[in-house]
Every structure is written in C-alpha cells, then in structure tokens.
Amino acid sequence: MTTRKILHWAPRVTGVLYAVFISLFALDVWGTGASFWEELAAFLIHLLPVYLILIALFVAWWNSWLGGILFIFLATLFSLLFGWRDPVTLLLLALPPTVTGLLFMADGCISKAELRPRM
Image (tube, rainbow, N blue to C red; front, side):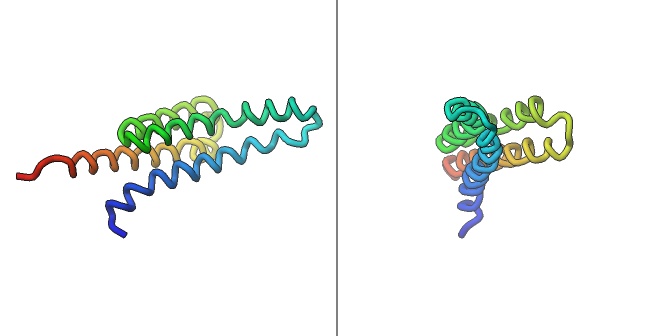
C-alpha cells in the first residue's frame, strides 16, 4: 500500500471511528426509568454531535480541504462546549477531529498537487 493511499484512507477511517466512539456516549440514556419515547428522544438528541461528524465526513469525502476545515471547526466547538473543564476530556473530544481534519487537508493538498501539469 502506498503512502498516497494511506493518506487518502486514514482520515476517512479515523472519521468513522471517531463517530462510532462519540455515539457510545449516547447509550447512557437507556435504562434511566423514563418512558421509552422519552429515552428515545434523549438518545436522538445525544447523537447530535455524531450527526455533525457524519455531515463533516460526507463533505470531506468529496472535498477534502473543506471537510478538513469542518473537522477542525468541530474540534473547536466540542472543546468549547464539552472539554474546557478537564484536560483529558479535551484531548478525547478535540484531538481526534483535529488530526482527522489535518489529514483531510493534507490529502486535499496532495490531490491538488497531482492535478497540476508537470513541465
């Protein structure tokens, strides 16, 4: 496998894994003693960060540069909303999308460089 292929697939795989990781936090709404519909509504609301990650991943799949910017924006947003009190939480919530965003941006730069005609 070439470095180019690794750089192409690494941000996509890390984006999907990060969405799965964040979705695990939504499972804590089940078994709270509320009705099924209240728990379902809470579950869907707790999945809101995952929806944002999947939207960014969808955009990044077609436009690496813009998707990279979106992932870095999500890292900033998650840091401000959830991770500003605890450094470990900050690392868990902000580091993976930052790395994913930078990998998407690097992939976009290499893709543009390959499209330029050589002299």
